[in-house]
Image 1 (cartoon, rainbow, N blue to C red):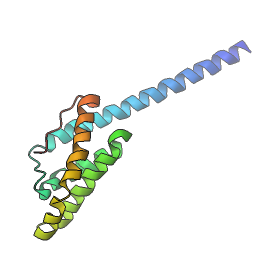
Image 2 (image 1 turned 180 degrees about the horizontal axis):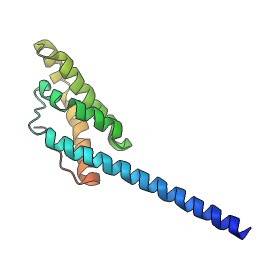
Image 3 (image 1 turned 45 degrees about the vertical axis):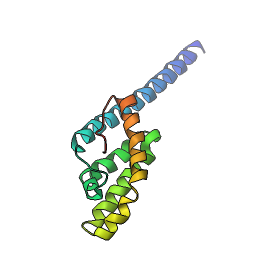
Length: 127
C-alpha cells in the first residue's frame, strides 16, 4: 500500500511538473515570436492602414500563440491588418478603416504593456 502511495505521488508530481514546463515553454515561444514581430514592425504608421499589411502574418501567428490576456487584442490587430490588405489602394475603404485606429491603438497598448511586463520585449510604438 505504501509503494502505491509513493507511485501515485511520484506520478502526480511528474504531471504537475510537466504541465508547468509546458506552460513555460508556450510562454517562451510566444515571447520569441513577439521579439521577431518587434523587429519586423518598425515604422508601421497607424494613420496609414496600408502599413498594417506589413505585420499581418505576424499578427495572425501571435494571435494563435498569445496568452489569454492578449489573445483578443491580437485578434483586433490581425483583423484590422487583414481589412487593410483587402482595401488595397481603395481610398474610401482606407478612410473608413482609419476611423478604427483608436480601437487598434488601445489593443496595441495592451499588447505592448504585456510584452514589456511578461516577455521583457519592447514592441515599437505606433505613432
